[in-house]
Image (cartoon, rainbow, N blue to C red; front, side, top):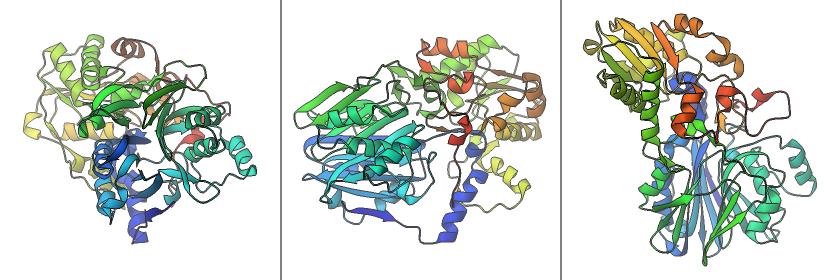
Length: 497
């Protein structure tokens, strides 16, 4: 299988870009990051796989901005291209577009969490047969856990590991049964895989999509015309390529698209739907739908529920753009306090500043978020954000609003307090850095410097989602898949440059 991986031309710039982004990007300081997004298309005959994958992955760019790649099936042969960078930059560097036109494609946008950030871990990751011919290529959203023993067994059986990511453990486990039908190989290969996974697997004559038995990470199916099937982490990517939404891939389901159509199989493991609740609160684009629910509407309801929980007299409601805005609109609708978009986001923020001093690092928040001072001076504010993680950016934002002359600041979080780090596909701080795990509400009020503070409670979130069939682990510490090893924090991302 031919694979092209673009290498960074200037190693110093590459180091600075990646090492300093955690300093520069306030979302890395006080937000959680999704691991990635997956996208795929299968058609019985040739289709514009280059453009479709480009559009679909661009729509999923919010789920991962570090690297991306595609594998295309053309005449029974799989060809892969992957590189560091954003989707449009990576596709721009593909020299011969015709090489990536075929009848099927899978793509991946990456935010690396498990495993180092080596270029070897950029997805898709592929497997070849004994003759060096392409056999499988895989993209994965989520995180599988406690794979050390299984990986050692696979290595001893002669299966090669080229990277150090949990995704390759899934791939090699399936490759072990490559002589079987693809759904049987997946079924057998996943018997010992534990954790969260929404996966697309490209084979020589089919594309398979499957989710873990809890359905923790999202995956949906769409259709273009009569015979082309589309698979995506979110429905917004279906819209981007003109596909009609068909349904979600069910927890514990294997869906195989081939020239005969679409086929459904079961993993034959106990299933219990536990979709990540943070997908609804933060990760998914507001124009997406999950489990039949409109993401935007759910976030508006979070704001309304917060007003029911914690009404306050104020002059204006503002939302932290972009993910805090729908809940701010909901709070405004419920309270009658006008919503005004007077916190402005710079959408052209670069990640390449060199910032040696703490003072300048803090000033970065002003570059990304800046208030319209004349609309704030002397007014009582209610500010809505999707969550408070470390509290770093929230504190700096409150300081900015005070400097702009705010009379009162009432902070509201559209998620419950985050008290437990996730090991199922979200990159977040360790317990010692989660501010709600270490401070009481009164202490948080003092730390942030606000007049009042409230979080959406878990019961309210369950009511909005319409059931308790979700993972609330980062709010409760109870996950649908628990680690048996003591150090849960070991999943957290570590830069390795």
